[in-house]
Length: 153
Image (spheres, rainbow, N blue to C red):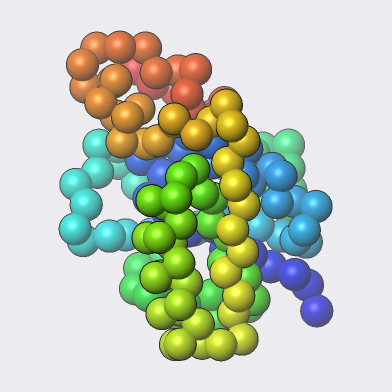
C-alpha cells in the first residue's frame, strides 16, 4: 500500500517554509498531496487557481507531489484520496498547541489516519503566509519568502 500524505492548508501564498517541509517529507512518503482547502473563515488575498498553479510550479520537477483543492473536513478528504497520513509543519510551540488539538480531533474522527509533524528548518521559522501577505500589502518585496513557482506582481 502506498504511503500517501495530505499536506493541507490555504497556501495564501505557499512559503519557503511550506516548500521545505514538503521536500523533506518526500523521504517518508511515496506521494505528498498538497491539498488547498477552502476555509470559510478566511479572506484570501490570492485566487484559488493562482495558489494551485504556484504550488504546481514550485514542485514541477517532483512528480511525487500532487496539488488538488478540496472542501469539507480534511479527515474526510484523506479517506477520499486514500491518504493514511496528514503532514503538518511546526514553527513554534504555539503551532504545536494548535496543531495538536486538530490532530487529536482528527484521530477521534478516524483513528487509522495519523498526523505527522515536521519541524520547520530554523531559518524558516519566522516565515508565515500572514507575514508574507503583510509585506505584500505594504509594498514590500516578498519574493524571497515564497515558493519558486510564485509570481508576485
